[in-house]
Length: 72
Image (cartoon, rainbow, N blue to C red; front, side, top):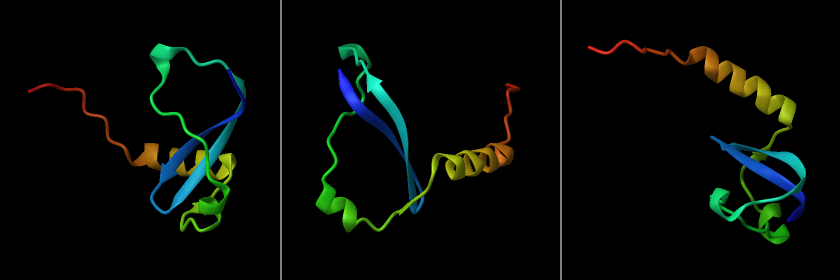
C-alpha cells in the first residue's frame, strides 16, 4: 500500500506528477516503483508542468497522430 502516491510522466524537457493518493499495488502490476530524492529534484533540468498543462500537450500530440489501420 502506498500513501500520497504520484505517477510521473516524462515529456521532452518536461515532466508532470499526477497525484494518485492512496494506492494499493498488486505484485503482478508493478512496472517501476521508486522514491524521489529531494536533493536531486532541486537540480533537475526538466521543467515541471501541471496536470492541466500535460492534458493540453497530450491533446495536441494526439491531434498530430495519424492512425492507419489498413493492412496491405
